[in-house]
Length: 161
Image (cartoon, rainbow, N blue to C red; front, side):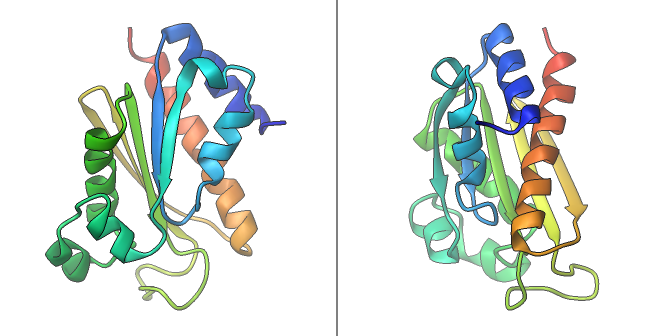
């Protein structure tokens, strides 16, 4: 069964006749899986790509290597790129990119500690970037991210006609 916020979000997307696709790094497919468990999945979910490794971002999604090297694979800039490039692979009304740090050993710094998550939503042609810092173990960080994305989507979708 999907998280309650995902079920609520899925219902809203279905009511608005919107479809969704994901490019996930830090969440490693968890968002797509949660939306697949929602009762409205068949009406809204187009698909998703797990691009955990930077090479997948570069080779599959065609994120320029210089952007990954300049900003790091876990950055707002790369998250925007994966959301934009996803549009070329999966046709949907909403494209969501997620990167971030759920464990140590990535590009963490004092300004970007473990728990930092970047979300970039493209709702039709509107770009909605978002950065959050979550606490906890990797599973808790991912769980919080999934709920955060559902909340962001519901806020944005409820404002559109």
